[in-house]
Length: 136
Image (cartoon, rainbow, N blue to C red; front, side, top):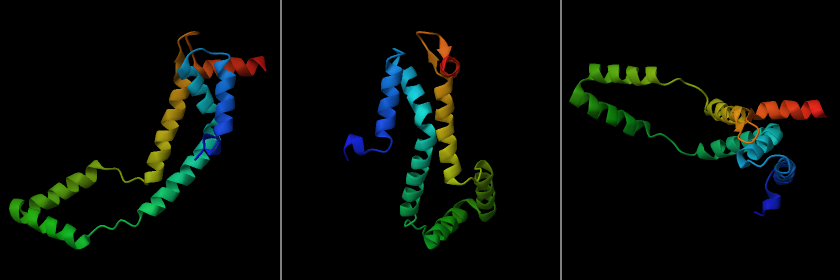
């Protein structure tokens, strides 16, 4: 796939060029470019994630094998201990849809972009954006 064919390539390139003229620090430019394209990027990334997740559904858990493992371990440690172990495992995991976890990770990265401190100006990116909007 050519670079120009990648989703949002021209928007990202335009944003990077715009901010590269204003700020010297590479991470500041990256954070500002990411903030600029994030709403559209989020839509594309979620669609790709859902397509990949749908393709991965082909993997199947072998329930019979799972029961055999449970029985074998129960024989060694005892059924009561195995039940307690299962309950402990269930209590340690929060059941959340994988898409929610994926979106939370994306939002964390998005927020970190706002909280990046530009070394040259010693200001946070969200302050730079506020200044930019006041000048407009």
